[in-house]
Length: 229
Image: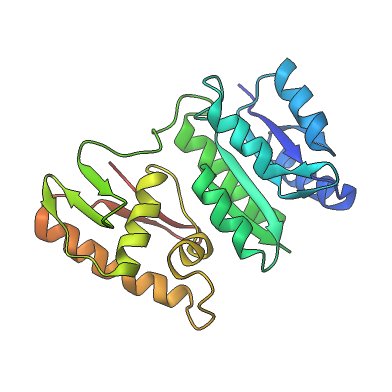
């Protein structure tokens, strides 16, 4: 069955380029210029994935993302967010609201198409995806900034806690390095993709100390990391 996508993007040139890349891969794309139009499309049609721009003339794709996650019918719908380069607060908020992946402009249409296909594969092309909170293997004490695995507390640094907490909130989803960087380091301009890789390596080692028989964090080459539970 052909996967159906809703693309919310107010720049016609970008929308045409994205739609062409996705349709070339056999996907069916419905394009909306405004948040209001996208809501109308979702009320009358069922989609397998959403690609939402953040800045729109009549609001933000984040508003629609919030609605999607709060509605039972669409709570597990895969969502990829688009935003202008450098709008870090949008990336952080999008992840907190439950976005599955993020791309900043300018981006490669081929990369976007690859990320969309990966999200569709993980969701079973429309099947229910993994719940946002991974339990009972992990327990995340947000107030105390502590995470336990199989009832045993992990000795995490502040950055490691933020990284693992972000992965937990989107368990089963692929998180790009940029998204993890924004979630764990914020405005620290000296941090890089290599910083994320280094911290993921130490996280894996600490998880193995508790459960040596299992690898929880998987690498998706050219895309990012995923917590498998």
